[in-house]
Amino acid sequence: MGDNNAIKILIVDDKKENLLSLQVILADRGYQFVEATSGKDALRILLKDQDFAIILMDVQMPLMDGFETAELIRQSDKLMHVPIIFLTANMNTNEYIFKGYQSGAVDYMIKPLAPEILQAKVMVFTELFRKNQELKKKEEETHALNEIILKANAQLASQYEAIEKHAEELKKKNMELDAFTYISSHDLQEPLRKIQTFANLILSNEYPNLSEDGKAKFNRILYACNRMRELINSLLAFSRATLDDRKFEEVDLDVVINDVKAALHENLQEKNAVIVTDFNETIKVIPFQFVQLMENLVHNAIKFAQAEVPLQITIKSCFVDGSELDFDSSAELKYCHISFADNGIGFEQEHNEKIFGVFQKLHSRDLYEGTGIGLAIVKKIIENHGGFINATGEPMKGATFNIYIPS
Image 1 (cartoon, one colour):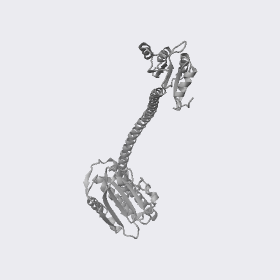
Image 2 (cartoon, rainbow, N blue to C red; image 1 turned 30 degrees about the vertical axis):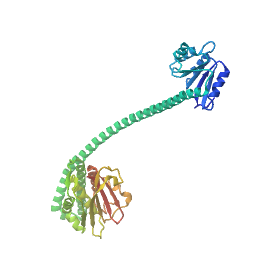
Image 3 (tube, rainbow, N blue to C red; image 1 turned 90 degrees about the horizontal axis):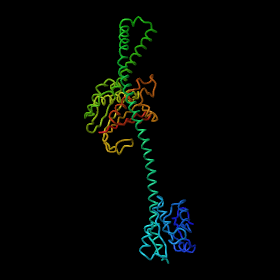
Image 4 (cartoon, rainbow, N blue to C red; image 1 turned 90 degrees about the vertical axis):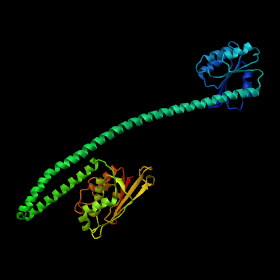
């Protein structure tokens, strides 16, 4: 008997010497032989094991001959395709041969057997069996893989549906939050305006009559009002960065920077600031938002300039392929890379993400004024353009902001 992976052959003959002869002829070919000494014995074996490549069966056996055995075998759905070769010394008439085929044989051989012919015929059917088994295994593996894929697809579909639902809910919440920020900021301005109106009246008419302690407290009220107005204006700017229509236009960056210089003229003069530019071609952006973006970056550079060093801001642009970038960009697109560098106080590189958060400040209010929203607005505007921004810095050696806008 061979190993479990060997191809099995059922040999049926009532004479032991014939069974041995068949095994000698077919030896050394990796077959596993199962012996049956009668038709009844063969049927008993086949009821337990149908995994045979071929059946070699003698015709003339007592009680149940090969024809009867073959007919019973063919009645089984699982066994009807197992090839049967009859081996007989008495197939010398056409009627006898026809009966053999009619009972289900695929071939017959007349004894004495020619070893080479028997080996060749058995090899054909065993190879066919081997190929069928391999095909069956592949089909089972394919079926199992398809089941896994179907299950995975069902899970992905379920997850995708959940993500879509979550995204829709998140979008709705963001819209509600933006609307709330926008409306609340407007509503907050009314009581603040009244406070400032009455404060200005006191400043004009009653300030000289206040005690020194009263003046100090009054100054703190005025300072708090101004900070509240700055905060409201920043919140409005942040909400507008989302609520404004995205109308893209070709823009000359030199025109944008000239507008920013005009808006921040006094601030730039105070710091002896110089803005150096080197732009290439125009860029398609949302004009209002991009002016706001540059204004926030310039204002940020002014705020964090070194005390005794004239401020220099260098802004350059060039076009790069998406495939050259090391972040999640589209390789098929070109990007306008705008670098914005200053020689200010810089920052520790570990804070390169934190600085873009809403209300995130690296320094106390006593050292540097501000609401902590300016760079968050910058990032929001870049995202509105489908772009990316990152920052690098070093303490007392300045900061550089790298902006990438798809063109």
